[in-house]
Structures are given as structure tokens and as C-alpha cells.
Image 1 (cartoon, rainbow, N blue to C red):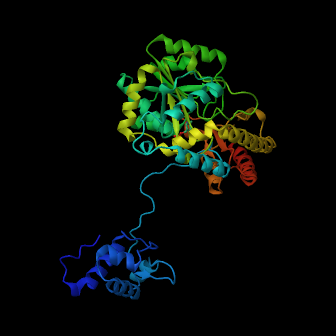
Image 2: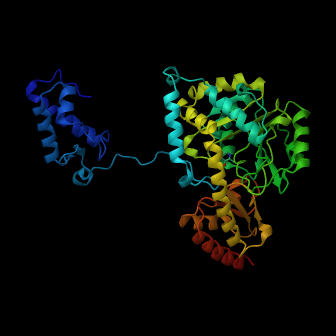
Image 3: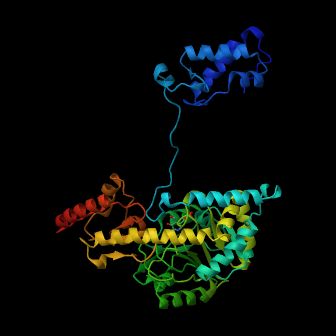
Length: 454
Ligand SMILES: Cc1ncc(COP(=O)(O)O)c(C=O)c1O
């Protein structure tokens, strides 16, 4: 960091003081940052320890540093106040990912079991495993996942058809690039549907014609009318309304995919959380050469792991791996290996059983409270998933109600947020975090808004 070789010996103290001062003023050394011990810094810079001691004392006297008895010297927090300098520390640059309804309760993350799996996995990994891994994904994980997806989702895929990704979001990016490579530049999306996913597709240069969704799921008639050759859909549990694609619509969708060189991109995002009966299985085995399905652990474990998978038709795998390599050379091996252990030992199944119970109870309590002031017909998606949709009067401003609820800590979203055109009104509640105070407030807000709109 400091080159002192050309500085006359008598000026070392002055020079080092200036360098540290500049680093603090410039923000390279932020308030609270721990400095090396005088002994360690002297050794690094090949100086006598006395010079560094003098420098630290000088800067402490000037208010830049704060020593503490028996502990490290740190950059003083008071420095900014004393000098009147503008803080150079920028808290957040640019946009960030907002917490949308439908995420798991972070308190439910099985820290102890995950740690056990991680420890076992790390012990088992060879030195070679700690180099760049297989960009398609850790092979033992792809094997475990193909068994798991077959057992739980009815997906029929060899491990060679799986691509491990950093969350479904990366899957969307990979798929967008594959489809563009096939000459497909429009991917129809559900209306309403995930705004984040739609924005991503647009960012990758794909247009997103909207396709209406009703209580029987995606309208295949409307899909056909768009002329798009690919559709991104959530058939097992529509996001955010919770509707399930009706059997005749599934049939129509499969007919559509065979009508031309079409693709279905299935977002199987939270199929593990069905509370009344087994979830409807994945579409993938019904047209494996035309359907890309995928999901992640974002709903089941935590979105912070950034770990997911795509199951691809054989003819698209090579291209998908190429895209993955160009994006990040592969998903981190240690967390893939930990998830492998988690699946292999049955810890994932146990966690899912516990989570299902936890969210079912929460969901029942929320629904019970909502039904004290709402008609059952306006509630949808109460049988599955981690969010509940409430439809409200079209004259009521759902954005304003959602803003009010968010101001008291709820993670609700207006239904209108999920539309490209002609939004319907409603509210999407988060099962994991909704509190009774939020529901009390919602009752007051809806009562007053409905009164005003009449
Ligand atoms: C509809 C939908 N699909 C997929 C995901 C998962 O995205 P990721 O795996 O990138 O966290 C989410 C996350 O909130 C979602 O809402």
C-alpha cells in the first residue's frame, strides 16, 4: 500500500501519516475499519515499529484514529463530525431487489442442518473440486436433483439435462439468450405475472406480450393470438393469484406447443407448498423436447443461497452451458455440494415437512382473520404457496392501501403492480411475515376505501 523506498528516512513518519490521512479522507478507510497492529504494519513496510507507533499516536491526536485498550486501533467514527467533511461512504448505489410477497420466513431456515450438510460436503470435496467446477453444475447435485424432481414433481430428466443456476432469475437470463439464439424474440408472459421476471426478459432484449390469466389459469386462446413462439408460465400455482392451470387448459397448452416450433418455459417456483393435496405435477414429461422447466431453493430454503436449476430439452443443453460459462463460469461448488448432502440425507424432505406445517398454520390464521371482513369469493390461492391474493373493488386504489400497509412493516403488494395493461385491483399478502396488526389495519383501510368509493 505504501512505497517508502524513495522517501528519506527522516520523513517516513510524515509520509505514512499523510497516506493514512488521505485514505481516511478519501473513504478508502471507512470509520470503524480495523487497522493492522503496529507490529504487523511495521513488518509489512519494513520499518521500525517505533515509526508506526509514532504515526498511530499522531493520527490519534488528530482525531483520525481511535485506539482501544487491548484491542485494535480503528478509524474514528467521530472523524467526519470533527473535520466537517462530507461522508464519502455511499450506502446504496442504484436499484435493489425489493422484498415481494411469497418468500420464506428467514427464521425457518434450518441453520444447524445446513451447517452440518455444508461441513460434511466440504470435507468430502477434493482439492480438484475447489478449482473451477463443472459449469453445468456439480454432477452429484444434478444426480440428486434429477431423482428429487422425478419423485416430487414428476419431471423425467437425466442429470445431463440439468443446468445448475444462481437462482431462477439466472435461468430466465439463460433461457432468454437461448431463445434469441433460436430466433425467438418474443416470450409471452402471464397477465398478471411476475414483474421482476418480465423486466428481466425485456432487459435481455425479448418482448413480453401479455396473456390473460383467469381462475382456470393461462388462456391458451389469448396465447395463440399473440403469435409468440414461447411462453413463460406458472401452471402449478399461478403467480401471484394462486390459480392452478385447469386440465383442459393444460391439454390446450400442450397442443399449442406441438403446433409449431414452440417452447414452454415453466416456472415451478413453489410447488413444494401445497397444503390440501399433492401438487399438480410439472408439465415437462408431457413434451420434454419442448418444455424448459426450472425452480430454485428461494422459496423452500432462502433466496440468499442463489441456487436453482433448469431442466432442458437435450438439444438446448450445449447452448445453455455456453451461456452459463459466459455469465459466471458456474455456480459456487461448496453450496452445490452442501445442497447435495441436504437432499441425499433427507434433510430437505424433513425441512419441507416442517415448513409446510408452519406455513399451513400461518395461512389458516391469516385466512380466518380475512374472512371476518371479506367475502370468501375474493380470496384466491389459499390452498398453496407463500402468498394470498385478495381481489378488491376496481374503484379502490390498491397501491395506496399497499403503501399504507408497507409503512407499518407489511410486505404486501398491490395486484395492479403485476399487470402490463388494464390492471385489476387487489392485494397480495405475504404468508411468512403478515402480522395480525397488518390485518387489523387492512380491515380499517378497506372499510374506509370502500365507503368512499360508493
Ligand atoms: C414467480 C417467481 N418465480 C421464481 C422466483 C425465484 O427467483 P430466484 O430463484 O431467482 O430467487 C420468484 C421469487 O420470488 C418468483 O416470485
